[in-house]
Length: 229
Length: 229
DNA sequence: ACAAATTTAGACAGTCTTGTCTAAATCGTC
DNA sequence: GACGATTTAGACAAGACTGTCTAAATTTGT
Image (cartoon, rainbow over all chains, first blue to last red; front, side, top):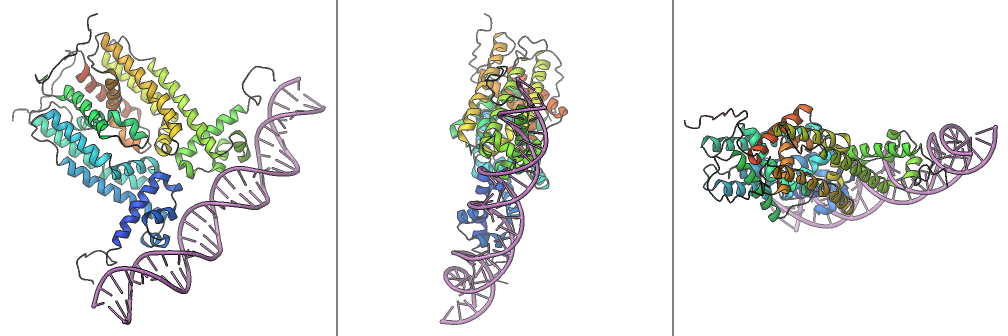
């Protein structure tokens, strides 16, 4: 019974910071080296603590790994939902607004440190921990994709888009705005902001050609490329 | 100076089969366990040879790994180019033809054993061997994507599609027809044929809404969903 | 059937890693 | 300043893995 400021932390606090730095360092090392290649000594050194402290907070390597994935999933989900809250429900310029949303989603949730790490861990160790990653699937795409779909449904209901199946449209939106980043993602790289904007711009343009309300008269400079040779 | 039948293979042949089975087993184990977790004894056992034979063909673990990636890249590229040769240059029903092409590409090149293994190795170990995977990038996406783009350019030139930038269209085509398979790919799974067909069908429908010649009168049952409540 | 090359099984040294243990040092709080 | 809890450094046993070596067995071509 301490001063009651933080009700649910057994050890006082201040080394909760240590727990955090351990999980952070572990995420980085697990990503770089893979689960088997990750070295507890290295994690401890990178976290700035002794090896024993690592074993003190997390009983063994496997539990540490699970804590890392849980932590990343939680933070990434929070970021994604925060970004979904910025979805343009009543767009002015729907093209620019969707591009902005796509760029925010990429920069704040997918290309940032947490997103990059979580993606890599899922790809690398997903098959080794089926339940853990089933949990991620439910908590992650299982909740975020319908949330995005609901926003697109609302845009369609408001007459800004023509959409048959909002779930399909949401997945295709993500596929389109990330279409040019696939190779970079594959290799674990981080695309530059220019690349993100470029891919989002091209993706949204195509998305609106498919789902836009009509061939709206804004900026329709047609490059009818020699169609009748 | 042997009988000259196979000019560039030092050992006669017949244990070239062994070399193959070693590389094959190594691919499977490297994928399952990662580079650090892969065990040479296990690779030898899975290949049906002794450990010494593994060290005999490939000097050490790292060279074995490199041989695996080179081998997979080569075979996957061959498969992709073979499939690109079936691209519908003069489509009858362009929708059905593009769906067929997308399904072939997925089933024969991306979802098959080689494709799955190569993808996983790139994701898992890409950062550890920059030159090796730079080579893959050049030989793989660097050559296949322009080849697909050229086919789309031809369709546009023939008046079957309306495309500004064939490179962008090609990448977006791939993004769209794979939009519903992302989660499965992430976790290293193999989508069922139904899922592949479904994703391709939805993807091509959207692709043609964006790049199709016109709102062609075939099957336009509009679900105008309560737009004016 | 013979000879050369290849493969095999097993042992081996050296290295690395995990997880535990202990005693000293440090930190936070009263 | 003192007390309790936490952290630290280092040693340690047990096990796993790589890469080498040797001698016997097997395959291959002629």
